[in-house]
Length: 358
Image: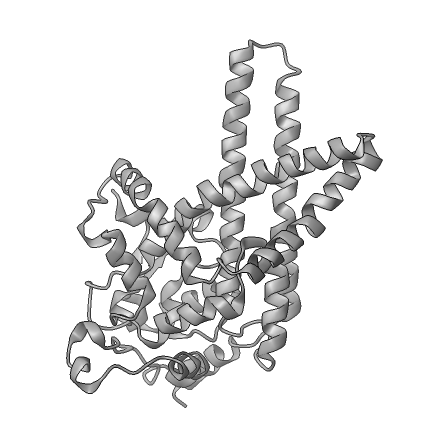
């Protein structure tokens, strides 16, 4: 059994709707897909069988994970408000209270943005039919409801561009490579944290616009779904709690609910999330590091990576490209297995620090 074929679902789906480059153009390296550069023929039958079993879908586990991730955001908002109110009840100078409150809010925004990135990663994972492989429509419906709508995304629209990344990896059609080129990543000095910060500020506006345009977020349908989801799941329940539970007038309760939604969801999504996402995507590939998909894809599993930049096992991007049918929830133990059993896999590109900054 050749487990290299286990990505046939993703690769076949990716190839179905991709325009094949003319034969003459295919001669140019920039216009043809990088070879995969990896197979599992050298692995034992037991290891290959274990890898195959890792492809199993667990929709209820994904729903539970999505629900907890979404719930963590209003929970973080409530904790932040409680901390800020307690600070102003302490006997300390107002500038100290204000400074501590601002710092608390900014830290909360970082945590919330990290959770929002987790939802985006779950959309990406679902685009590979890892929720319900036997029924793409049910897979898309569940993922859109639990993770897509909250972050202005949909599985079907996301897959339209992501299938090209897998199906034409490294070619001029690869949207990831196009984004890196537009950002000028290969020409930017990222040797220190300060230089990384300056680069992120410089590329953020164009990068963010390109990302949402790429996943189809400009459509009226997705905006309608986004607004309806947030009103029904977050704004209306909070307004009801403030009105019936605390005693505010309806107009005041609704205004406070909308204000809370803006400062604890919209602002982290607009300001902090793109920073995390842009760094994360920049770390996934170095197209000049080799000539195959395996040679140019990174594992980013340092402490800061797993804590902030690559939640939901997104750190193990090599696993995802080699075995796109394996859900990301399984990536950590699959990575550990191959590190122990596969000398070639253990030689893959790997970072322990953010963008390898010393």
